[in-house]
Image: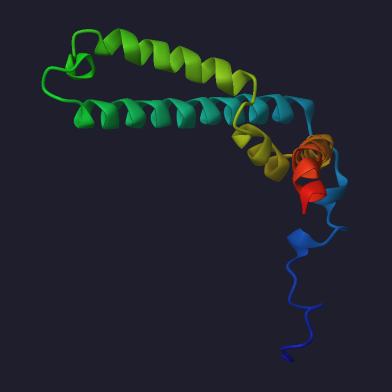
Length: 129
């Protein structure tokens, strides 16, 4: 095989003419994929908050209020609720990234929206240079 011949090296899954790329997403599959992606983002945010709280507890002094484990169960519940709310708003964009991979046809507007947001954020930075 010639190293410069990349046309035969591409797998059929990446080919735009493959049936999976041409077929529209099943609405039931899209709903389940969206729910799973949002739940994964909530899990990720919840885990991050748990690790942040654990780090704060480890760094706190012996007489610090952060060292007290009395309300840890309520704080964990509050962290989970915050994580669920943030994931529902797609605050971190993890669910969107997963959906772009699972639902390429349906993920195109999300990709365009995130690209437009990125352009709006980067525009002031580019003007100053």
